[in-house]
Image (cartoon, rainbow, N blue to C red):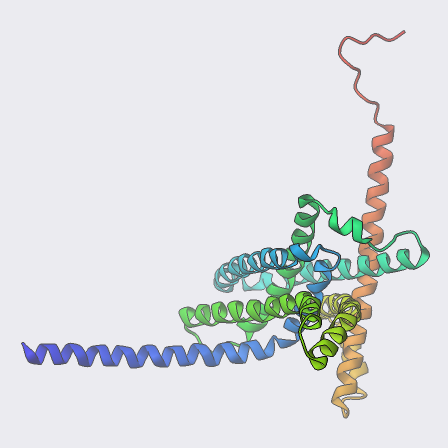
Length: 325
C-alpha cells in the first residue's frame, strides 16, 4: 500500500516537472514571438488613443474597456481561425493580410483627408459642448471603428507570432499564441488607459499640497494635449506604414514582387546604416500605403456618386390611393 502511494507521488512529481517545463517553453516562446511583433504593438498603442480623443472624460475608461473587450474577442477569433487555416489552407494568409493592409491604408488616408479638410475650414474640431452631447450611438461608432482597426493589427501580431514559434506541437503553438494575445492586449490598452487619464492625474496633483506636486500636475495638464496631437499623427503614420508594409510584403507572396523589390533595392543602397535604412523603408511603406489608400478612397467615392445618381433617376413608387392627372 505504502509503495503504491510513493509510486503515485513519484508520478505526480514527474508530471509536475513536465508541466513546469511546458510552461517554461510557452513563456520563452511567447517572449520571442512578442519581441518580433513589437513594432506592430507600438503602432497599435499609437493608433488607439486617437479614437478616445474628443470623448467626455467620464466615458473614457468605459470606452477603453469596451475596445479592450473587443480586442480580446478579435484575438480569440483570429487564433481559432489561423490555427485551423494553418492546417488546411495556409496559402490564404497573404490574401487575408492584403485585405487587412488595404483597410489600414484606407483608414489612414481618410484621416489625412480629414486633416486637409480641417485646414481648409470645411470641417472643424469638436467643441466641448459637442463632446458632452455625444450619444450612445456615437460611442458605438467610435468603439466599432477602433475594434475594426484592432482586428487588422491583431491579425498581423498573431501571424508574426505564429511565424516565430519554433515548435511542431499544435497545442504548444496554441498556448503561446494565447499568452501573446493576452500580454499584448494588456500592454496596449493598459498604456492607452494611462494616457487618457493622465490629465486627470495632473488635476489631482494640482490639488495636493506641495509646490513640486502642483508643478508636476500643471506640467501634465499642459503636456497631454500636445501628447495626444503627436499620438494622433503617429497613429495615422502607423496605419499607413503598417498597411503599406503589409501590402508590399504580401504582394510579393502572391506573385507581384516588384514593389517590394523596388523598396528593397533602395534600402540596400544604405544598408550600412541600419537606422537610416529602417527610416527610409518605413517612409516608402507609408507612401505606398497612402498611394493605395488614395486609390481606394477615389474608387469608393466614385461608387458613392454613381449610387447617388442612380437613386435620383429611380422614380419613387406611387402612394396607395393616389391618382395621376
